[in-house]
Structure formats: structure tokens, C-alpha cells
Length: 127
Image: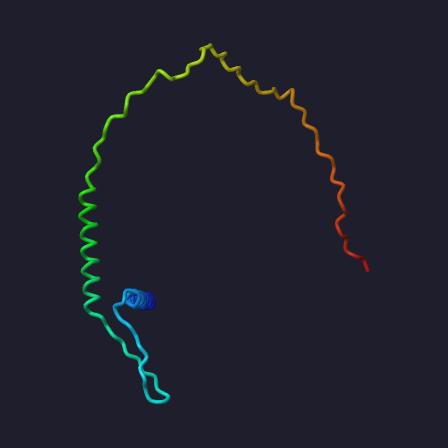
């Protein structure tokens, strides 16, 4: 419910801001009695109707343009290759790769790790 209320509030703020920017309405402070505020809101209905009509026409023209552009473009074959400027070097035969040999277990020497000589762990004090 709160999300719906937020959506409605955002829509109202957007319409009010756009309407004020486009000149659909104007707000004027009017003279009033002492201690009271008075505001007049003037709504320009002709401007609203003309802007909505222009927007509708623009939307229809964009949709019609999209429909006419929706057919796939005609595919043309690529131009033939010009082989006159292709650079080729001398050819030579490559040697076959040499196989990788793994060392045998007899060749591997495993040495034990040296003993740990770090600091002594703390010992509990004896009373």
C-alpha cells in the first residue's frame, strides 16, 4: 500500500512540475487581509489541450516510423576481395613439437622441513 501511495505521489509531483514548466498553470500571490495568505491558480486549458494534441501526433508519427523501419534491411553481398595487395612470405616446414618428459620419481629429492624455532608459547605461571 505504501509503495502505491509513493507511486501516486511521484506521478502527481511529475505532472505538477511538467505543467508548471510548460506553462499549463501559474500561481500568483494575491493581496489579502493582514495575517492571511491568498494564492490564485490560473489554469491554461487551451495550452494543455494543444500540448497533448502535439504530443499525441508526435507519438503516432514515431510509431508509424518504427513500423515502416521494422522490415529487415536488404542484404547485399560483400565486395570481392582485392588479392593484389596481399603479402605472403616464404613458406617453410615447421618442426614437430618435442614431447614433454616428466621427471622420474628417482630423480626427485624430498628434504624434510627444518624444525620450527619460533618464540616459545606462553606457559602458565606456577604459584
